Image 1 (tube, rainbow, N blue to C red):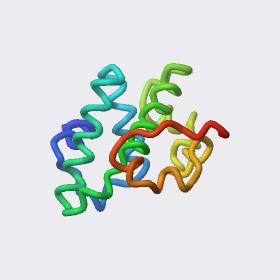
Image 2: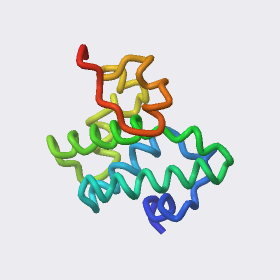
Image 3: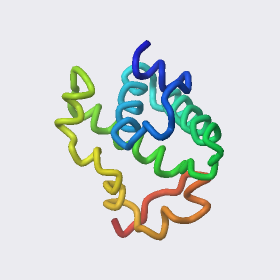
Length: 124
């Protein structure tokens, strides 16, 4: 099974699923699906993962969709043959704080941002 198949099947333990894995899952989903289908699958798999460990409240809708949109934009700007090439060309995506370019820290801490999608701050 591929990494993506393991991710979608829920075979990757949450404790072993780090930020780089989030980026990789998004990248691989976007290679196979359009944005809306990728977003649905990505959010669904992450919600299942957080529910499996008894912490569904840690799923963050805004961060998930904002990262996926950023990955999609980078993929459109420059093609990469594989995830390693993509990651090397986009090292800032490996830092989960990259969204601070568009979102103030307080906005991402809100319950609204966690359960639904909120737009970036206009000042950014």
